[in-house]
Image (cartoon, rainbow over all chains, first blue to last red; front, top):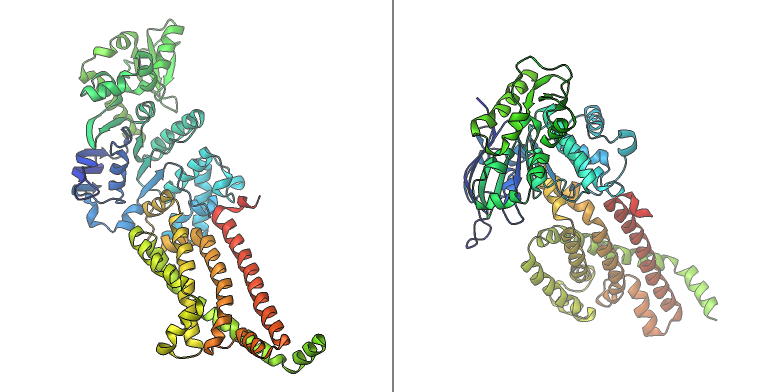
Length: 339
Length: 218
């Protein structure tokens, strides 16, 4: 059974005594190792939701659990050190070098110099900032994208199992944002992190999230896979949010892994293939440019995950729900095998 | 005439000049030391309480507007003549300047920086010493610089309540029309103020570079 990294039970939050609830009776489960995005306009309570989880705000009512433990019963500082926190505009400490910024949590945990040093180098390499070049720079000497990379490295320092990311790429240009999106997906898969990622960008929410929470006025409108949200919106509000996306746009944000079917083992030797993380638009591209009846879906290492047939593709809009989950289920099985 | 007097007085009373100078320095540093010790925690606290900070600042601004001779006189019945009265008065005067700068310094720190620190699990003490104090340091030092320069000036007046210091030379000089004493009083207190201002503004510059990352140098 899947363990829930985070669980909220009937959580509400208001700031003043007489003001409205900013978060209203939210119940939600974030399974371990999943990537969940929270999508909403400003004022929807999505940032408040994140801050309730790391206790920058305390819930007015309801309970929050971290791997089954009520977070109110944990020492708040120790608890926060187990959660990586990445925010917009990086929140880097301007008076500290890149190295010092990344070493803050190790310093709090009183790691020795050598261990801290090697961890900093390892993390900077992970976020593609060569340590020799960047270690001694100050945040003001970095571009927005580089700052955000340092922010991610800093959050990962003590190897937290959960990352909370509050619009981390909101202020970046489109190209940098796409690069960082790809990298955070890779980090999540490689290190099996649980990530809760807040964004106001529909595209980003669906591209990154295995599941997406849609919020409005402090309430959850829908918590589902991007596929279901796009093709089976729960209400008018969700419909409006996603209706701006035309069919091609929808294909652009859905990943191949979301509709992959198990292979029957007999595949044409020249069948085109895509990566599990590629979009359905890439799959469509393969169909249109080759003569193939099926497109194979492979994982990063080239291992076969399954295939997508042209028939499947044509049926997307009206497909029964049971079919949709096959892809997700397969992914889960595959994930366990890899781990 | 003046120069020969000056040479003669300086040669014969060099020890007086030195002791006046040291006394003045002691007066200023003692009062500022206590003033800063009070103002940093108070300013940190007030930076998070907007309404209260307005009230407290208004009170100190009223005190700041009282002419120094009057404020010194007010304390004579309570603390008597001498060093102690002068220190208390200087402390009260510098509170306004210090608090105003310290509150501004702590309030100017980006909210996301503080939340990043908290969210990472920093304790209140770590947050204060690792983040808030270094980032507020330029504003705090700027406050200390202005307060020091103004305290050096007010301390001249404090000689009138028997606190000693360079003011003694000035008052004696004016009463006896002794230009030599007036000269030394002016040169010493102005020189002290000038040097203090220079040293502290250098420190402030260093703190500013540190707080914003070294690239601010350009």
